[in-house]
Image 1 (tube, rainbow, N blue to C red):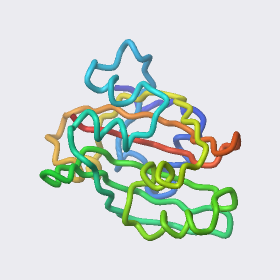
Image 2 (tube, rainbow, N blue to C red; image 1 turned 180 degrees about the vertical axis):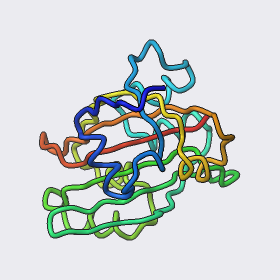
Image 3 (cartoon, helix red, strand yellow; image 1 turned 30 degrees about the vertical axis):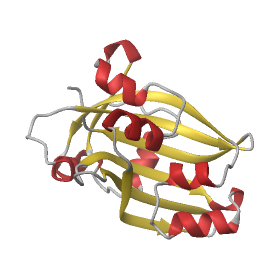
Length: 181
């Protein structure tokens, strides 16, 4: 796979750069059309819905969130997360999220920052008007960090997506979501 990557909006590189000085530690990304994504991954990724709901339906299990790292500025809250099936604690998703905190009500932002529920569940529970815009699908060859998080073999591949959540018609949340099936 080529080391050259064509980053898409949201700027994949800027999301990865939030937590990885060397993006190859996370993985090598190649943008792919939906038709090139295996069916099980396409079912999980190629839709305009929250990944919380998609994962719960696909895996027949509620999911929990584990926050691995976070960063805060006056305007943004960013974190890298794992989603786990609650039935067996298996990691099923890795993600990087960047939230424009100025566009989210303070009580909702406090619940997000409490790290108890996945972002999608918080927004759904608060019935905040939201639209998920799928931007790109990615074939990912995991680097050492992602391989460790997913407990994958050295040459395994997985797939992910970049998306933007619009809240009340404003782009508020940038997402990189990588799943394991």
